Image (cartoon, rainbow, N blue to C red; front, side, top):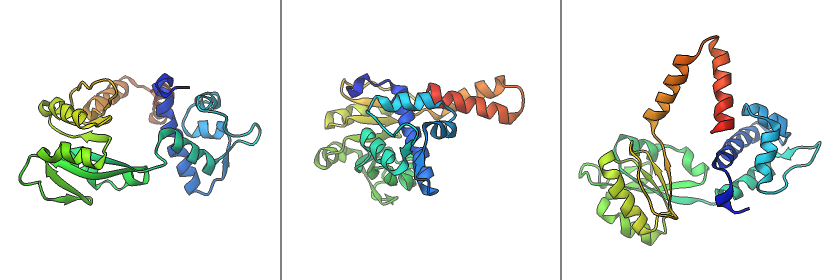
Length: 227
């Protein structure tokens, strides 16, 4: 099946399955059933099997999945069985926090450089990545064959930087700026609005009644199965 025909919630759950499987592998688990995998994510075994069926036949009836093999297969599906170089645009508090995060490389993403316009930041090295002037962005992206970028700029700058990235050949943008941006066809944009996520939590927490533990189980189920 063509990737653009895969429902977005399925792709999202693949990342959840991969994260859970990697945790199990770290605990020494070698095999797992769809039911056990589903239980760990508060979804159903039928949903797990249906999601994986979009991409082929995995596991064996009555035997389950080999954890290491399924991890590798999911990485291939998600294209994270190789390392992607990524640039960060905006080296403020958010951008520098992302650069310092050590978990990206283990997931297949190498934050190779950051870009900003502040003279106080240019020339610094954060998390092993140099901070360069924004004027160098397009040349760096073209020469280094960068296809993914993270935006951590003020909202008023987000669309302009998005345009620069698209002109340079970027094909995927993770946008932390609290504003929607428009990109041409062929460029995928994913929005990360922390304030909006907190508003969603506030809505649900304010509407909940009953024991906190029960509330947590209900919300976790919906996030895992409906997102």
